[in-house]
Length: 340
Image (cartoon, rainbow, N blue to C red; front, side, top):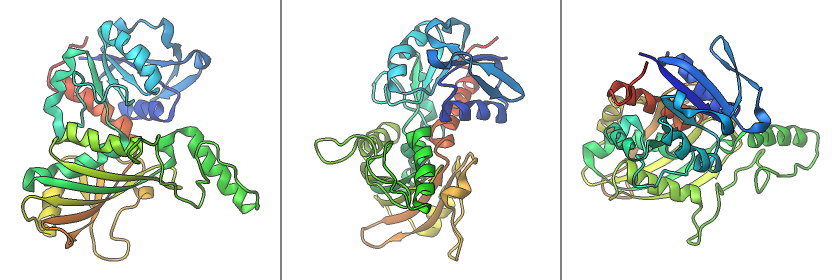
């Protein structure tokens, strides 16, 4: 059985990653349609050994598709996702537009695959924030084993999470510094090269940023509404790969050895945790991989039943493109979609 797929935002970082992952995972594709804004009409993108020409989303007939993958930002999703869904395509949206809609399931397949059946209310499924996706994959086995009460997480998020212009800014500023030019920030509020910026998304009235709020709200929706979470989200001068330092407080005691073994058996996780030089995974090493990596698992002695660990993942993959494709695979594997 084959499934026709429309990809909205095919020219962006995440859109191109989605095309690569559809090919790598041998997704049962019938036809693939690359869609973009009017200024990108005719632009070519690669899908395996094929070259696709971008079509105008404004004139595209979504009734030809079984699945519509959206990777073009909230304003595009707000306008076009309901139209695609009304035409019969199941929308899997990577933006934040529908994540907190009670009638739209927010899915990480390794964590809450059963909730995917709720897509029928609006024909839309939301993909979580990139930093949330890898976090809940790591938290799920610990929560099942000993019930998480509280999470404190600090993120180290790569520039690709802010788009191509942000990656270009890191590259250009780095070159400028080496020739003694003073870099001027454009995509970011401050210099990103050789610096870190404790600010992602807009500030809210309580002093947290929207990115930090997303991690709290999305973790509750995906995993458990009773979990308390506080986050500090930081942009760092890397190109791809988000990292997180995580502290959890559990209801029941769990040793670091037991936690390591429980996480090792969990889907989507790889444990690389040797207590020696280099016995951990860094963002550079996770690029291009499907897994979420966990290292530095240890007891946190400052709270009762506390654990701490380090978590890294390719944000363009598990944080966005891979998770969307996995959602589509879940729909197919559970016979929730009829193909041709």
